[in-house]
Image (cartoon, rainbow, N blue to C red; front, side):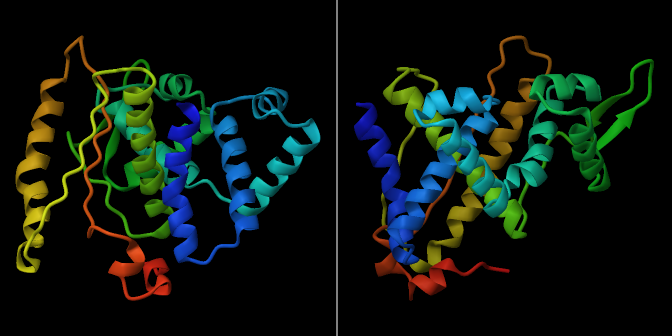
Length: 247
């Protein structure tokens, strides 16, 4: 089953690579770096990564060099503030407690907190041990800058992986997935966003508020998306247009 499921998950990047005319050699190298990158995110040592990937230490060293040279992880600059803010939704925490929970350097946590503070999203509470808390109970992290959008993509795909693992391998009823294909008049397309803004978002905010102070809470990733049905090459003007970034 593992082979079939992983193969199915490889089809979306393969489809996008075809649209953007990415050479097979490049796609293969990126797949290797992505696999290695995940071991680094999980905190594995170089030798542990080599054992997991079933490659030599020389190969791991090469992957590490290529990763540092060619790719910047948007999680480091945009994902971390999001993760820190999500932790603070449950209640005020000190910098040391956040760093311990996220297994990060205190300096990285402080940088994330200062970034959130500059945006008016968190504030520091003075006391015997200074803590940080969120200013408002909900925020929408919608940004147009490309690195922030890549972090959003990582977050979305992380939700997909969580749902796939939960449903196929863990048999976890908390993992839920449904895809609805329907026909909508072009003039009614904006109503989809209105449905999210006026119905789904307020309901989700109320669910989150109800969890404050409760002992039996569960952290959930909920992803909602929609797009025209069909192969992208049949839906958009050109592969070049599909690859352009909206300002």
